[in-house]
Image (cartoon, rainbow, N blue to C red):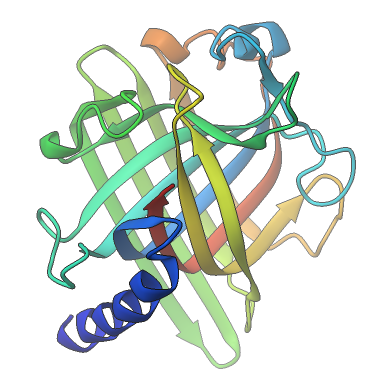
Length: 256
């Protein structure tokens, strides 16, 4: 990771200088992600949000109808403002994020309402919602044969409270993922006057989508979710609308 960390450290120097007057850089990391977009029970979801905030549901495009995202994350290299490894320097986790908007005032972004992490030092996290996963496993493998590249991922996170989020998927990778990124505000669900800014660069590979109907490259798929506080969200009526791989995801976390 020496070259990767040196590159991130250099990026921090530039970013910190550019943000010195407006924002504070907290950390930066390189990640692999897999995201499942759900439609879940509106009433159950609304109970997870603070007063004055509602889900911000897209009416078109690949995120159409999604009101909840389950995001599995392999944080492969995490550095602090000094360019050195932050904490253990790597960790694996899963969290649930809601696209949100303010009913009065027009603020928009996302809220992380729950998550399971293998690292006890990351509990309860910046938004006070992470639990320690007593079971936290991940395997990822890639098989290449000529022009065909196939990936298999297995993730399992279970907390002592009974909450669990698990997934198995096998899929054919796109030769070149679409490049994207930008800035999103993540608001504190307990005090939405506080937020962090996630600035990202990413490659996204949409494997299956209910709206845009790309070629279906999912070969095998299963998931389990529920228990504890999130049981009402995963009551058997939930529906998946998108299966998205992020083979590379560079994220900088800032505060205003």
